[in-house]
Length: 175
Image (cartoon, rainbow, N blue to C red; front, top):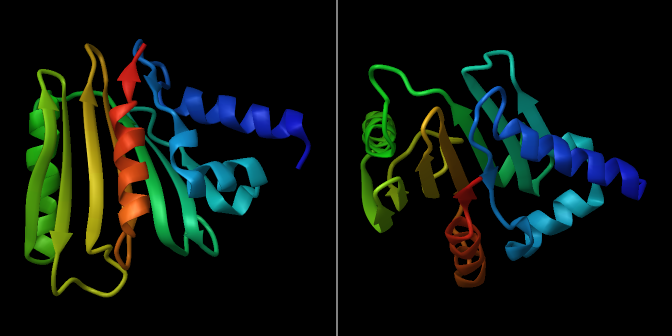
């Protein structure tokens, strides 16, 4: 894929994180070697972008797997506008935990937290086929927007991959 097209794709991904919202989510994708490799390769099948609902925009980037629809490890990025039910990062974390618990038993571990963000890990057991049993999340709240980064795997993260994902999530901030 030509360099200009890769650059255009990366710019589009950056914009997707802030559709019509004042906040812009920024993170260093280069900290995850597998994510960097996928983005550098520029294979459009590995990236899915859904902006049909501008109040809830979703990107899926397959890091391991055949495509953004058939992945073994992926980064999911969601940008949404707060509403009555989900107004803060803590509200969204609580919803994610409730939704996950409906699928299968899960253990949640908060890894980092501040006034506007929460980073946590989910480890689930006995899940339905296709549901990723391991995920790392970072929820970040701005004034007019909420963002979620979720690194998910259908197996388990290697120690190196887990460290890379956590480093990338720690690099996350709003501009």
